[in-house]
Image (cartoon, rainbow, N blue to C red; front, side):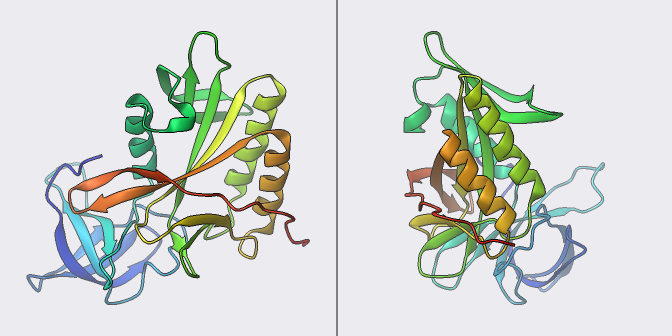
Length: 241
């Protein structure tokens, strides 16, 4: 997934109202940028962080900049746009770069399933069970090289796990694919202290046969691409309420 226009660097002043941020560009100008991320963005919204914005000249958009990346002082990167993972995964599925799903030729995005939901991708191939694939954006890191999900409570995420379990009951494959938009992670685990309900849903879905996959990404100012598979820690037991 390549950015449409060259990114410009700056320093974050603040992120507020969930979808807005103020950034001081390297030119010295202060601009307001769209923040395409409704989550908590723990560790990614500190004042002074080096960020990269994508400018646009679309007359339909009120804001002329969109926040795309954080560049850390140690040279690593994080993507913050939650719309990017689906675009990255779609390209990877079509190119058959995700080993566990490489046997599927047909990739259909946003297919209705479950109860008033749309699965991110439905994969089909003659002779194989249909594969229902949900994608989650991951960019929380709190310890060592562990990527964690979620970074805040996500009732919608728990619902998706339940619906994937029902697809397994119907004889299909069901896959939860966590895409890590960071370059400094080597392992993946849940964050049950941030959302114990999601952790319990994860346990239940995995026991039901939902496949849990995790891939990292290659990130730079030009774009975001699929990387390597990361190990997924076994969630032995979610904490009680």
